[in-house]
Amino acid sequence: MIYIVSLLNDYLEENMRQSILFIPTLKEVPSDAVAKSHQLMLRGGYIRQVTAGVYAYLPLAYLVLRKAEKIIEEEMENINVPEMIMPHFLPATLWEESGRLPKYGPEMFRLKDRHGRESLLGPTHEETFTEIIGKNIKSYKQMPIALYQIQTKFRDENRPRFGLLRGREFVMLDGYSFAATREQLDKQFDDQKHAYKKIFKRCGVEVYPVIANSGTMGGKNSTEFQAPAAIGEDVIATNETGTYSANLEMARSIDTFSPEKEELKPLEKIATPDCATIEQLSEFLHVPNTRIVKSILYIVDDKKVLVLIRGDKQVNEVKLQNALDADSEPRVATNEELLSIVKATKGGVGPVKAAYADYIIADETVKGLYNVVVGANESDYQYINANIDRDFKVNEFADLRTANAGEPDPVDHLPLKFTTSIEVGHIFKLGTYYTNSMNAKFLDQNGKTQPIIMGSYGIGVTRMLSAIVEQHSTDNGIFWPKEVAPFEIHIIQMNMKNDEQTVVSKKLEEIFSDKYDVLYDDRNERPGVKFNDADLIGAPIRIIVGRRVSEQIVEVKKSTVQESVEMSLDSLTEYISKELR
Ligand code: ATP
Ligand code: MG
Image (cartoon, rainbow, N blue to C red; front, top):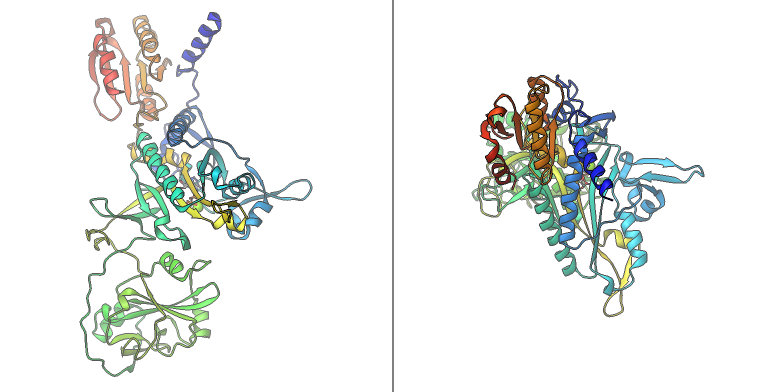
């Protein structure tokens, strides 16, 4: 037994030696990598691409991934959510039941088995969980419960890019909750939100929980966790105190323009040649853009929807889709469609006598405007002095505009600031969307059959790795937050031929391995090579064992600090326990 334990120790110790760890670092910045995190993870020998959007996680990346997973496991345990694992390979019939098969489209990796049965590789697992829980839960007494898994997902993204940020195969934490009442769901959602905040904090990711698009299920039901980063594909709008934060798709702002009440003037049609833009029109007519109402014809779920918005504002199509409760994304009518439907080109479209429109919806900014300019449903002609109700009807007013930076937020009226960011997580009150379509029902306290109330919760674990690197790096190196660093201490022996240095390095390795993850650079390489690699490996603490070791002195460098400091071997233990506490 003792023999086995010591063998195991040898093995573990050996594992920390850089000479046998596969870390294929690169000197050059890979030309095909745009994102800083992608470049650093390739240069640092963390990952290699196998095919577009599909990566091998080499030992360094795998160490970080395992640490992030361990943090997730601990935080899920803290909120009493057990882990399990679902298959990757799924029958298409599950997705037919939920109705998502056609909607999911080409992002789904589909295949047929030898009997010709339609199958797929799971891009997410709402259906699979709903099916199994629905079949096995019969009573309110069995709820609330929640489950999670950490699993590889497959999505045939149109443009996989930025390394692990948008892959076609990636690791996701996905959790699902099942409740008998709305109150139970609210509690589950809050627990998950709390756990997610802790996970991101421990992983060292700065995140904003933001109001996110939950389609037709309502605004408060979905929160995204957004990590600010230059490469981020999302934009979030926040105020400085953090009392309001939303994905730009959903962000609201207060309109500061207040029109004055005016006498209604007679409607008049006038020629406006060569006015292709609002600016040109405003100049030509000598009116401010706030007196012009833009009319845009959208095709939404096969309906012709005329959207009105004040000339200084832009339409937010996510808000439009939600306001209309539409299944499909709104699409602006093409020029050909305009010519056949309206008999006018873009600038001539307007709400007066617009019988072609199935529905007219206007942004709130249009309310209270007087004597406005609108298209006359004739190319190169506008009406001036058009007025709501007298000259045209609006079926519905809604917030349809894109918020602008600097506008007051809707909570505390502080200026909105925009930041690009990476969506690292998303939690969602699904309600009964899946359980209704998949017939997952239970008997409530009164013996009545009800659909189970669901929530779903996800973190892109491999995407998070990239987000960590984006937030904790320079162009030449990574400084990993200590809980997810592949190694906490990196011992660098300057001269492998110096026996004294070898003895001290090994001793330090032995002492610190007890408590910390230690990497010992025992390679016969020049110091320059070792330091460059160490910058990419990014351990929080670097101990350089060099010339002055005969005087019991080594150099210590924190990854976040440019300079190293000399330190006696005596004070090392205390220093490290303080730094890595
Ligand atoms: P996106 O808008 O970025 O495509 P999504 O809305 O499709 O994301 P979800 O379906 O909510 O994402 O998936 C949960 C989490 O999985 C996301 O918050 C994100 O962190 C991660 N994720 C989604 N797609 C990818 C991908 N292609 N590569 C890596 N991680 C991803
Ligand atoms: Mg997506």
